[in-house]
Amino acid sequence: MLNLVLFGPPGAGKGTQSKRLIETYDLMHLSTGDILRYEIADETALGMEAKKRIDKGELVPDEIVIGMITKIVEKNKQVPGFIFDGFPRTVHQASVLDEILHSREMSITMMLSLEVEEEELITRLLNRGKKSNRPDDQDVSIIERRLKVYKESTQPVRDYYINMNKHVSIFGMRKEEEVFSSIREAIDNMLNKKDIHV
Ligand code: ADP
Image 1 (tube, protein in one colour):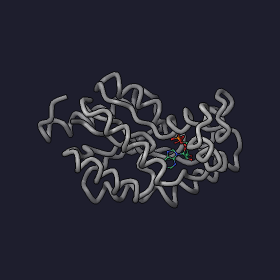
Image 2 (cartoon, rainbow, N blue to C red):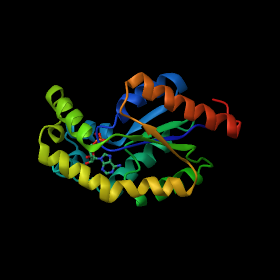
Image 3 (cartoon, rainbow, N blue to C red):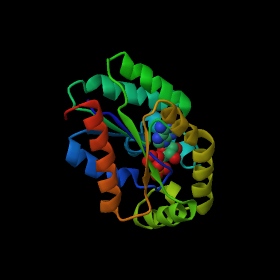
Image 4 (cartoon, rainbow, N blue to C red):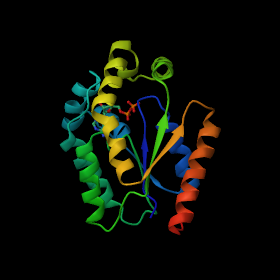
């Protein structure tokens, strides 16, 4: 199995690169942000609870996202692998993800970390906000809050994977195709090293 964590701050390009990864490696895309937005659109209790946090630029509680991920991993035993996009976002989520996967004899193959400077992130998010109806992309103070939360709560997740020797840094301030070609190179190197076939 090929299980990837696509990591990076809001606006780094995780969603865009995920689309390309799914096509190339036939993986199942699991974006906690997308799942939460579906729940909000459906006006479920979980969605309403999540919306309060998302609109403020805060994280949704670990239990909620961990519950969602567990269900999906459990339901999809036959897939060649997963792309975890926007998850794990806290060290607690990362260690629970390991437990969930290990209990099913699976593991994370690698973390791909998209690196983009803060000024560029703000520009990208505000542009996205003009085209989409995401309220969290439309207000500079909410965007700044998300970037602060990222630094405080999410960045330590990178160290978690560095310590396990699973982290690869990808320079994200280039054309989409160029970023993707670096991602592909990193994955293919890893697969060759481990002699994994997908
Ligand atoms: P982006 O990375 O551009 O901020 P996402 O779609 O990944 O966009 O996330 C949007 C929002 O959803 C986050 O700001 C957060 O409130 C919530 N969210 C998504 N994934 C998680 C997660 N794993 N843990 C907690 N909250 C999450």
